[in-house]
Image 1 (cartoon, rainbow, N blue to C red):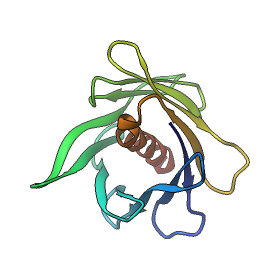
Image 2 (image 1 turned 90 degrees about the vertical axis):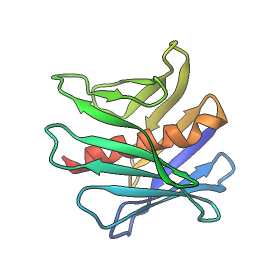
Image 3 (image 1 turned 120 degrees about the horizontal axis):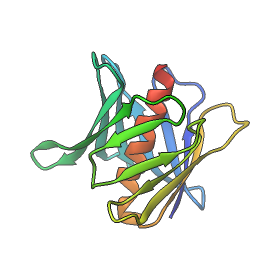
Image 4 (image 1 turned 30 degrees about the vertical axis):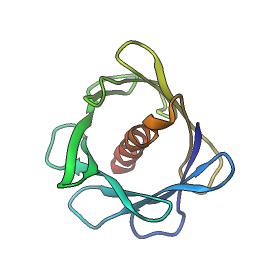
Length: 159
């Protein structure tokens, strides 16, 4: 399953549209005024699905991930930037996944605990806004993979 992750050019807050291979809107991401980044994810009919929330006052950037649940938001894990000199590193405690990326943080791969590829993420250059291609191995992992991409993009924007 391929998704095109595209930031809206004229927006006061972080806003993104996520499209499938046919150009149909699959997810909508809307930034919310808060201390640190707070990004809510909706489906195409604008039903709330999840939140990516930056924890503030931490030494290295950290984002908590929440899924919509019957009794409110359910915490599913976090992604945290790790200290490194050359290659960017992130610690993820979601689904046992881990990330390997390149020096510029434009392209990276997400792996399951058993080493199986979950998703590849590639940044498209020469666009007016941040644009990524997310190739997800299993459609049921799309929302969690999208949450990781949103968190990493928000971390880059915070520098």
